[in-house]
Length: 91
Image 1 (cartoon, helix red, strand yellow):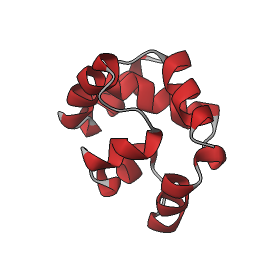
Image 2 (spheres, one colour):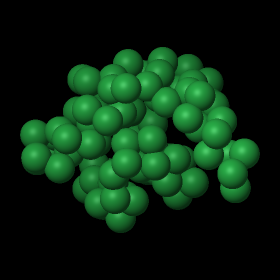
Image 3 (cartoon, helix red, strand yellow):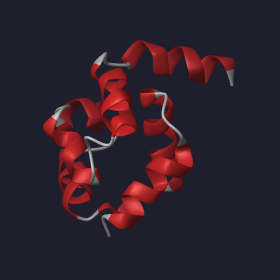
């Protein structure tokens, strides 16, 4: 697990921390609004997926796996359950 944490830190973008504040304050109300603050290319690289898939997930977040939601919540330092509910509410 230690190696995974180190590799995540290498690709972590500072905008993920800003997302935490925006989500916590309620300024972001839907999952798609995340992409108003962080480019899809950054999220795509963090999730190690391709451009077509991340574009599809932006408009249909039902395709996210729990592992991907967990990765995003870790990068944002945001509660996994709260992020999963945000994704679910966007479906």
